[in-house]
Structure formats: C-alpha cells, structure tokens
Image (tube, rainbow, N blue to C red; front, side, top):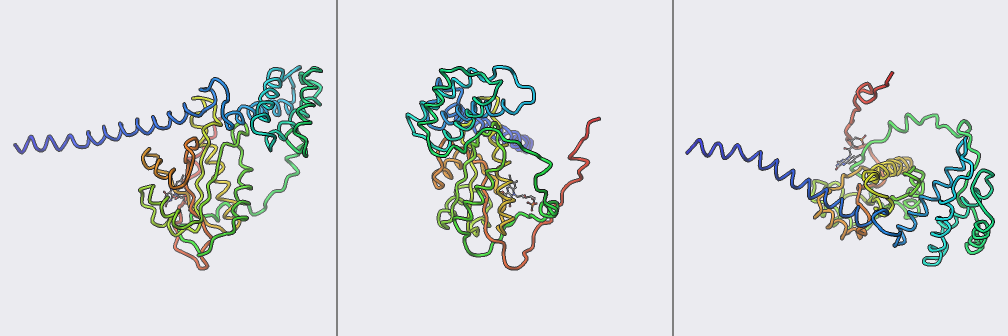
Length: 330
Ligand SMILES: Cc1cc2nc3c(=O)[nH]c(=O)nc-3n(C[C@H](O)[C@H](O)[C@H](O)COP(=O)(O)O)c2cc1C
C-alpha cells in the first residue's frame, strides 16, 4: 500500500512537466494565430491600412537602400517602383496623403534623380502626378551625405550607461504628457527591420487603469502600482511578412524599449521593465484593460516616474564577466 502511494507520488513531477509542455504549445499556438491573421504574406493582397503601409514601407526601404550602394546595379528597381506607385495610388485613394506618402515621394524623387535607376517617361509622369496629389512639404525620405566621423561623441557615455539602474520606487507626480511624448519620439531613433517601425507605445497615467492593468498580469508586481506612468510597448503584427520574421517583433521591441529607457533616464525619469506574462488568458485580460488592439503583440511593460528625492536601496545587479559573454573568433 505504502509502496503504491510512493510510486504515485513520483509521477507528480512528470505530470507537472507534461502540463507545462501542453501550456507551452497553447501559448505558441496563440502567437501563431496572431501571426497568421495579421502578417502580410498570408493575405492575397494588402487589404488593411496597416498591411498596405507595411507593403509600401518595405518597397520604400528597398528603393531607398538601393540608392546608397557603392556598386549600383544598372537599371535597378523596375518592379519595385511600379509596385510602390500602384500601392501609393491605392493608399491615397483609400486613406488620403499623410506622413508615409510624403516619405515615399522623397524616396522616389531620389530614385528618378539616380542615373542608374530604372525609369521611363510614363512612370515618371505617373510619379509627377502623384507628387502633385501629395503636394505639401516634401521633406520625406531619400538619401543624404553622412559622415560618421563628424557625428557628436558623448565623453561620459560609459558613465551614463553604467549609471542606470532599474527603478522600483518613484517620486510622486506625473511627468507632463509633452515630455512623455518627447521620450517616445526620441526612442523612435531606434532602428527596426527594414525601417518598418512596427513598435507602438501605449502610455497610461490614470492610476486606476494602471492598477487594473497590473492586476490583469497576475504576477508579483505590487511595486508597479506605485508608478505614476506605465508604458506598454507592443509590436504590430501587420508589419511582418511571414514565418522567417516570426521572432523579429521582440527584437524590434527590445531595441525600442531600451532606447526609451535610456532616454527616460536622461530626463531624470526612472523605469523598470516588467516582463509581460504571455499566457493567452492574461494577455486577453491586459489587452482589454489597456485597450490594445488584437493585431498588436504586448512585448513588455515599463512602469516609470521621477526618481525619488532621496536615495533608495537598489540592487547592484553586477554583470557577468565579458569573457563569458563575448567570444572573438580567430
Ligand atoms: C525584459 C525584462 C523584463 C524584466 N522583468 C522584470 C520583472 O518582471 N520584475 C522586476 O522587478 N524586474 C524586471 N526586470 C528588471 C531586471 O530585473 C533588471 O533589469 C536586471 O536585474 C538588471 O538590473 P538593472 O536594470 O538595475 O541594471 C526586467 C528586465 C527586462 C530587461
């Protein structure tokens, strides 16, 4: 009897493992569902505003980048040019001219000015008509002469990097909306794959809403309730093409989030990342309280606020040896 009881007990860790594995499948399936529903190449045509923006941004990037290569392919960009003109016509017809169409006109101006680029009279006339429709100030995309050696260098950059610590206690007071917007605008300098800029930032300062969002995550994050501001960084799934890019959103979000965190630190605003609980039920709950559309994948939370007036006990969070992190291959 005792033996049977003991052997039954030994099965428990195995059952726990099995449950964990099944939950992992469930979570990955939820990711795949969003990926298949929104990413560009699973659609017969770009049929939403975001997917059309993504298609145009991809072509823009290719046409812009092609103008920067040292050895340019003669007659480059034929099909891409025709496609971007057609998509942009459709975009203006459906949604009107905006920042994207301005950028497109700038890039295409560069394309037509490039002696190696493919062009013909009919396409040029098409472009000029489009340019007229967009009107406005054309300070969009294109190319310029960049000298990396002449860019500013921060003397105390190393000290600045080492001076940031995750901040879990905050001074009272909410930073101005203009300052928060400025922080996001500066974080937009972070690069993204093909410059598709798929990252979206949701900012909350309503304490009741922050409390509900925090509760929806079902994790030990009481300290987050004290934050005067909560940023949620998401990646818009419509800005990815297919399975080859399935992990790109987290990478883009990481680059953006770290830039945001450093910008905030430079403004005297402390922050601490809070891992998003990627369990589908929690994700749905957070999405609902935080009013985040289904096409956006929640990547990370970032509670923030001014640093407290007096020092607070903080983890040193020592970094491991660089020799473990870095292997220089001969
Ligand atoms: C993606 C990510 C998720 C994190 N999640 C949490 C979290 O859930 N709770 C928490 O207290 N800190 C969290 N942190 C903060 C880390 O614990 C912290 O960055 C790390 O210990 C290094 O300390 P430092 O930021 O002070 O240098 C997270 C950090 C990152 C980058």
